[in-house]
Image 1 (cartoon, helix red, strand yellow):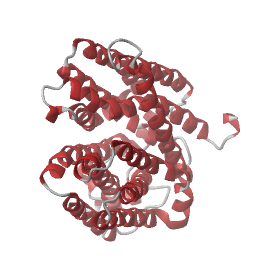
Image 2 (image 1 turned 45 degrees about the horizontal axis):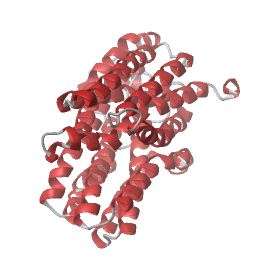
Image 3 (image 1 turned 180 degrees about the horizontal axis):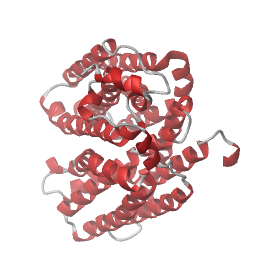
Image 4 (image 1 turned 120 degrees about the vertical axis):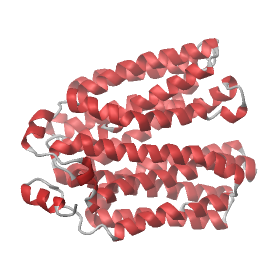
Length: 409
């Protein structure tokens, strides 16, 4: 079946399955991290620290991961991080036995490091197919997040009472999932990185950043994450504590949001062909604007539901648009350098947004939080308007284009 697919799509399916099983660890920790934190932390104020540490670990892990991938390749680097994370999951389960909160937070940060490696899977999928199929490849990998979001929490529940120590078994089960991902990755056929690097010249990151298209790609993904993380992180506290909605309703809203983040990937390739990168980014920003409007006028359960669903859709459009545009803005020999800069910006800003959301919701109102989001949205809109022409699907690949980029310096 895989052999009958268009060139490279067997790789995409393998990478999507790999991501599904490996990313379930992150989804599991998103559910149990604060629950374990509330039991082990010295104060309730530190209950969400494990989740924050996971986000921070992702942000600081980007550069080491991409540097290792440029040397060893994506496949062997993923294997290294998979094996490390299997042991980290076992160490996390042990931290629950000895009730060591600091050790548990360390494990959460290391799981974030592994997540940094997983983020590179979308680029590996896009590199496996022709440029015109890049958005489809990225969308397929994004869809794996839906399955991971289902599997991870299910394993958390299944493993909760597997031993006398609550949630110890959950980490055993996700360690098994990472092992499955390790075996699936055997079938991935990596593109020869050294050959690509030797054929193309390489510019400094300073010169790459001067490209308006590169800045647009980074801004689209980063601002997509900033607004989404800021609003999503504050939603449970706002709904349950401030507006008095039930925990069941709050859970339903968050689950719907996660589904809305990934399910649009089913139609994103079609929308991409119809509207192009600019059109998809514009719709993503419009979704964010609609989220703010609904939040300002409706604080009911359905009001929050519409906010968070539209927020998830907007994130999907902005993130996939930025991810698809990024490979068009650099030479093949620059891909690890450019991708490292992109992901470091994206996940560093996500970490800042997640960490600041708790402070914002405790010191301001929900409506004030939503109005703050107008700042990054406005920045993205200005960046989009000033970006100039969008590179073709083939991207930069000859000396004339390189010289054109250098003239912008």
